[in-house]
Amino acid sequence: MQIRVLGPVTVIGTDGRVVAVGSKRRRELLGRLVAAGGRVVSLNALIDDLWEDPPAGAVGAVRTFVSELRAALGADAIATVGRGYALRVAEVDAWRLEEESFPVSWGEPYADLDPSPWVLQERARLLELRARALLDQGRGASLVAELSSFAAAHPWREKAHVLLAHALFQDGRQVEALEVLREARGRLMGRFGLDAVPDLDRAEEDILRHAVTRTGGYARLRSASVVAGQAALTGGLALAQAQRFAAVAEAERLGDPLLTARVLTAYDVPANWTVSDDAAQAAVLVETARRTLRLLPADAPVALRARLLAVIALEHRGTRDAWAWEAAHEAERLARELGDPAVLAVALNARFVQSFQRPGRSAERGAIADELIEVAARHDLPAYEILGHLVAMQAHSALGAFEAAARHVTAVEQLAEIHETPLVRVFTQGFRVMRAPDEAGYRTLDLSGMPGVEAGFLPLALLSIGLPPDPLLDWGPYRPWAQPLLHLADGDVAAARRAAADLPTPRADHFYEVLWTITAHIARRLDDRALAEAAREALEPARGEIAGGTTAMIGFGVIQ
Image (cartoon, rainbow, N blue to C red; front, side, top):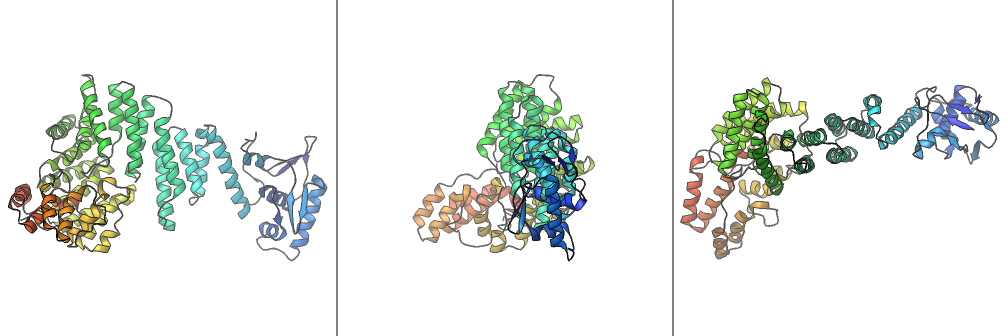
């Protein structure tokens, strides 16, 4: 005997004929026992599930239904266990899904029953089991329409969105898959106040990882880089960059410079921070890009060459290497000749990053921001419009024009809400703390997941509001500037002098003026005229700007 619930509740006898089991209530009771998977269902649970408002004779009715089902199915088909019942039939189509055995036929589970809570829950559970079985067989593309409807009907069900994302990925629609996860994450976190949604996070990691390792050639590798870029924009920065790195390495191994160039440039993620997230990885990408540029055929698309130059400038940030500055300006020149707004946006981003080679260039960065905003808004490039507002916020903050900076904060937060770019609020919240600085504000600023920003930021921020250097905090790359101050706090002037003598030259990044300002402070404390003169010369081009204002998150006062 077989019981089928993947479709209408049906019983097939040993002779292959349909066995009549009676009314809808009897079929519902049988279905409820199937849903229990052979486990005991108490009499009270059956009553609650069969009736929204149980009648006075519900106990007797259930017992009558059980007797009638036994008469139709056989006396041993339903066992009485205490004050409950359990199904004892071996052949049940839905149970085969539990055993990861895919049934031959499929229809809407319990299709002939009313949509009571247990029916809806069981339908969802069985659909998920079936979808997982098909996904495991690589047949996810056939599920996209069905799972799209399912996810829309169950907006708060994590698994529904995870399954849809995997189905889209198997259909070759990786970017859409990540968008499904991003939208679901935002919806769930907003509704329930969650800090994370683990199932969605794991699904995103799986999709990014498999985007690189799937079989295929050009399309697969370029798609992997595009997908990584989409993930980076929605918050999965470190993982996305690792996947991009893997895709680039695989592309170069294949020996086709055009392929390598396209994979390198497909990761189209604006950069508004000049401290590299992973310096070693960035160095490899730069060398790969420079090699690829030399190997490109003469007839390679100009747009591709311009984007490759921009990659070099963007990844080789925080230095004063002339060739990186030249790469940015050559990318901009080619983009303007092409008249391609998307390429121009990337080139302007590269020029912004390389503008830090010279201190005191906030006005120049403000002009870059204005053009980025205008070009991006006119040509629907939201990621670069967001970048433009962030750059403008930083440039105005450095110049002390805080009302203008605040207008860009409002604009960029509105864009971030529309385009779901959560990292934006880290920077805008940092701006608000800078405008009303206190220790609690800086300590609650969440920089996790932003490796180029978080390392050493907190102790610098606390120093900016006049707190003594804290030896227990992670100073990251800024430890050399903390060391003389820590020695002075301990009263060890000789050790402070030795540490001050070993201070490195600050990198050409957002913290350049900050570190020279701290150096000047150390020089005054030690009455070190040579060090003070070096700090004065370094800060002279930025005179009148706010030290640290380029970050729009900390400020050490106006540079005199």
